[in-house]
Length: 105
Image (cartoon, rainbow, N blue to C red; front, side, top):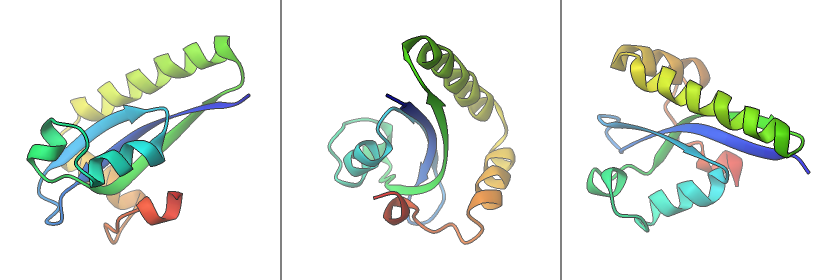
């Protein structure tokens, strides 16, 4: 069975605050953000617009552990970049800054 993991960025309707997250179920996690089901930063700042994501895949448990390491390194790499770097990353994938949630459900 193939296991996927995701690094994602969400923002608010004004595109003024960014949040970077990691999940193994992107649809479920964005649903939680949209419906304010988890307390924390994203709920406090009304972050529910998916503007960027990357997927990582593994084929079995051993590869999935390597996938987990890659995704966590990628998350740290994105978090460590400047806001401008994050915006460039988003705009390369999503130049209109549309909510990508409807494309993944």
